[in-house]
Image (cartoon, rainbow, N blue to C red; front, side, top):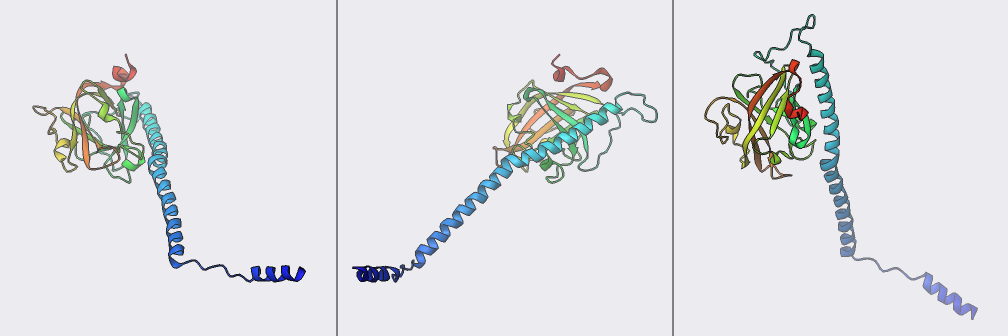
Length: 251
């Protein structure tokens, strides 16, 4: 009857929903927190592995283009009021200042080199850093020691483990081009092993002073537990007036 339906409807409307237990509420809260943290972690990973490379590549491209313009402007050796660079008197550069370009022809890469190995001012901007106090390419003897990120922030040295004996490394400065030949390396060594950047680097097998280059980066990939080292010895010094070396042109 109509009154029966009304009574049934009234009872249904008056039912009270059972209260969830504290454990259920807590579990739901923990689950939502885990999902939020997971999303934050994914965003952080994306930032580290992708966005830092985008930012660093942009900064490095700008620094490299500026250096190339400076080098080209200084190329004519007799510009009025601007003396030609003297390789025998290498300029002392301020920390963070770009002064050279490194070419890794085997890998098809080139990156600007700046003074110092500051993480914030140099390495995180996609630049290769020169260990202050080590040799310069124009020195008659010494070890031009460099560092760069292997992963994130442009990762300039990610693939230097693929460089082998006989591969070429070219450094371009305002004075000219310096070609080095890879002689070997150390797959893993302690981050505290500063002997690899000595004037005659330990572990390279060199008998005495010479004109050397040392590349250093973290290893294994995505960690900073050890350092990967590549050694090279200069085989050619080429003034800018003679043009680019064969290692770059492929000639």
